[in-house]
Image 1 (cartoon, one colour):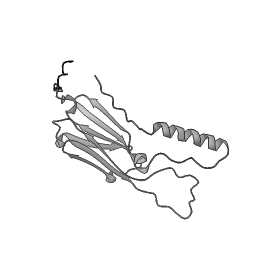
Image 2 (cartoon, one colour; image 1 turned 90 degrees about the vertical axis):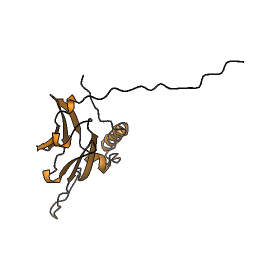
Image 3 (cartoon, helix red, strand yellow; image 1 turned 90 degrees about the horizontal axis):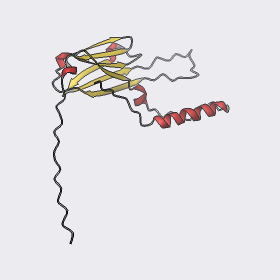
Image 4 (cartoon, one colour; image 1 turned 180 degrees about the vertical axis):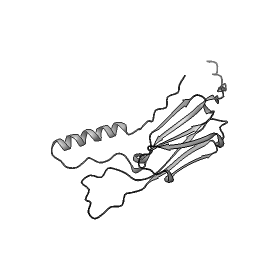
Length: 160
């Protein structure tokens, strides 16, 4: 049975409202946008897919515009951390932006690895703006079954 992890954005409804207000404002001829709900941190946060390939766990992260030298992947205490930085382009005096939506900055994304995974079992590749981290053997690592602890509650006193 495959586990699906969906990235949840608690501000999605507000972002949809923002887009609708922006659309209405533009329709009435207003040249401005209501305002960005996204922060620089969420704008830079990459989308991540986690999947299994045979016995391996594979993590893919989209990092368009980031050079391989600006990416750091580290494992500490069963936590995998992806760090990257997208640098701002040098502006020239001949360029005058009408719209500038592309962002730059840094991000850090940390994910827990299954128990029993060792750093030497992990390797990473970078191709066409996508990081692919392969955790060898992680898919066959089974989670221990939960042990349920009985709850002791005081007994209700007899009715008088």
